[in-house]
Structures are given as C-alpha cells and as structure tokens.
Amino acid sequence: MFDADVLVVGAGPVGAVAAYRMAEMGLDAMLLEGEAEPVEDLRASTIHPPTLEMLAELKVVDSLIEQGIKTPVYHFRERQTGERVAFDFSELGEHTPYPYRLQCEQYKIVRLLVERLQRDFSREVKFSHRVASVAQDDDSVTVTAETPEGTRQFRARYVIASDGGGSAVRKSVGVPFEGMTYPEKFVTFSTDTPLDEYFEGFAGVNYVADEREWASIILTPSGWRVLVPAAGELTNEHLVSDGYKNTVFNNLIGQGESVETHHRTVYRVNQRVAVKYNHGRVILAGDSAHVHNPLGGFGMNSGIHDVWNLTGQLAKILRDGADARSLLDLYDRQRRTIMCRFVQAQTAENKSYMEAGSAVAHARKRQQLEEIAADPDLRHAYLLRQSMLQSRLDEAAIQ
Ligand SMILES: Cc1cc2nc3c(=O)[nH]c(=O)nc-3n(C[C@H](O)[C@H](O)[C@H](O)COP(=O)(O)OP(=O)(O)OC[C@H]3O[C@@H](n4cnc5c(N)ncnc54)[C@H](O)[C@@H]3O)c2cc1C
Image (cartoon, rainbow, N blue to C red; front, side, top):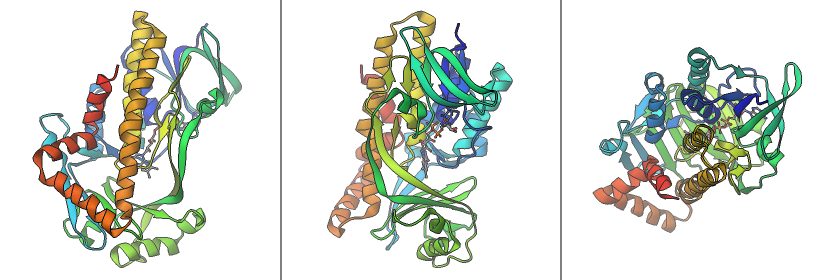
C-alpha cells in the first residue's frame, strides 16, 4: 500500500514546482515540508527566461510578473572607476517570450504554488513533516519523518529529494557531495535607500568588480539587495551589526549611518555536486544535488530545470510504463552534465571576474567581456548562455 506514487521532500521552489507539475500532469505526488509554513526565503531573486517559460506552462507566470520587476539589462562594473560592460536580454526576443530576468523573491514562487496546489488540486501539503531518513527495496521507498503526531513512515514508489543543500535524504542515502566551501562568508543587506542615485547609469542588476570588496547590487521588489564577501573568521553577530553595515555602505556610497536595512543575512557558500543524482528510487534535485555561488542567479533556476526534466521522466515511467532505470539515468546524465559543464564553471568565472585579482589578469578578462559585448555574434551567444536558454538546448542534445 503506497501513501503516494511520489514523495517530494522539501517545499522550497524546487519541491514546490515538482509537486505542482506532477499534480498538473495527474500524477499522485505528496509534498512533505519540515517547517510549519512556507519559508520566507529571500535568497533567489532572479528568474531566468526558460524558467519563466516553465512557470507559464504552469499558468502562474502572470502572477509572478505582477509581483516582480522585469530587468532586461545587467552590468559588469568596475567599483573604482565606474566603467561598465552592459548586456541586454531584450536582444533575445526571437528566442523567448520573456527576454528579461524577472526579479522576484523565491518565496513568492513557493507561496503561490503551495496555495494553488491546495486550492486547485485539493492536494494537502504536509507541513511540520521533517524527514529524517529513507530506506528502499526493489519495489518501494519508505521515508521516516518527525510529524506533529510523532514519528511516521510514508511509503512511495519514488522520492524526490528537494530538501536543500543540507539534504537529510542525500545524507541518508550516503551520496558524496563533492566540491569545496568558500573560505569567505557572503553577507546580504536589503535597503530602500535608492542606491541607483549614487552611481552613474546604474542597472537593475550590477556585478561590481573590486579587488578589495566586490559586490552584487540588485533591485528586487523588496528593495536593493547588496551582497558582499567578508572574512570567514568574522562572527555572524559582527557581520549583521550596525557597525559592519555602516562600513559596507560607507565604502559603497560614502555614507553608512543613514542607510537603513530591513534584512541582513550571512551565508556560507559552497561549490558542490552530488556524484550521481539518481539512487534507485531516490532522486536528488535542486540544492540537494548541487550548490554554487549566487553570481549569475543560476541555483534555483537550475533546480527548477532539474525537476522539469525529472517530472517528465516520472510521467513516462508511472503513466506509460517506460523503463525507469534508463530514464532516471538519462535525467542524471542530462542535468548533472549541464551543472558541471555550465553552471559550476560560469559561477566560478563570474566570481573570479568580480574579485579583480591581478591588475593584468583582470584587465585581460575585462577586455574579453568588452569584445563579447561589441561583437553581435559573440554577444548573442553569450546572452543565450547567461539567460540559460543555451543550457536547455544543450540538455536536450545529451542522450
Ligand atoms: C545570497 C543568495 C542569493 C541567491 N540568488 C539566487 C538567484 O537570484 N537565482 C537563483 O536561481 N538562485 C539563487 N540562489 C540560490 C537559491 O536560493 C537556491 O538554489 C534555491 O533556494 C534552491 O531551492 P531548493 O528548493 O532546492 O532548496 P531550498 O530553497 O533550500 O528549499 C529546501 C526546502 O526543504 C525544507 N527541508 C529541509 N530539510 C528538510 C527535511 N529534512 N524534511 C522536510 N523538509 C526539509 C526546507 O525547509 C525548505 O523549505 C541564491 C543563493 C544565495 C545564498
């Protein structure tokens, strides 16, 4: 007796899209979430064009566009001189109906999908269900969860682990998560101070290179989000203090005390990929399968692309009786290859650019970016990669 065909563990953006798409496809899926309600997580704000196309297929994109900010242009800037290289997703109009980055906080995706799962599909989302372990045999997988009613077990044909970077499911299955943790911490501040008034020709998304303190500065519906690195040995308490905030904004705009912030958060950031995404009946997706730095806005997007692929494979397996092993292996090959070849590499490259290492090396990298921006063919190819449209094409070509 099964509780559901598919258990989805974790109602972040990846688990929410997985559960919602399976409900749309008429599959029997149940969503388990450890917290008591959707988490108000501000981490991701950039939604890329192919993800918007997926959300359009789920008929939720219009509501998110209403709650977000369309941002076609982004800049790589030099902090010291203000020089910039601009890229404009509007040039991708022939490839996508959504030629822009939509800036919209990730929790809005989750709230909308969870609300509609309950309203339109009468699917209960099991909050306060924290999964501790999974065990599988040839025919089924059993999840053990701490619930308000005590420890409970749920049995299903498949489990999607979308329980984030610290995934209890991944650990329970014993999957190595190879890679490294950056030595520095990443600190974010959200403010309503109009930062664009302090910089000439500021875009909605700015990657600011500086050898002392790089920054990403992005306009979101909840204000300007500033992300800076900080020495790993500094305590989180210090990094969210007024004194530290004042220093960051003094460096940035020449005044710190007058800047009020409504969020200050410290993150430890990793570059890691699970050695394999499918383990029998347990399949990893999103941050449980891969994590990397946020420069480029690819983490949540690639997690949603994972479950778009995966739920398509599960529909063929569960509805059409297709061979599970070969389709889940294909999911692993397609999505892990894209992750290693593009996302991990591009995020590392973006960070290295912003760190502005040696003057000579940085000048060379900047010249390369300027050459790309000036050449229509190179620029077009670059924009296709940065918008993640290219990785969707590349994924389909992997067999
Ligand atoms: C500063 C910063 C900025 C970022 N900006 C972007 C961006 O602009 N664009 C982008 O694409 N990505 C961005 N990212 C990355 C993005 O936030 C993550 O990739 C994304 O949240 C991953 O989604 P997920 O659903 O896989 O995991 P999560 O969002 O971590 O969700 C996991 C869910 O599982 C639940 N859970 C955890 N453990 C259990 C358990 N044992 N049992 C049940 N439930 C459990 C959690 O409560 C949570 O709800 C950013 C990251 C950072 C740090």
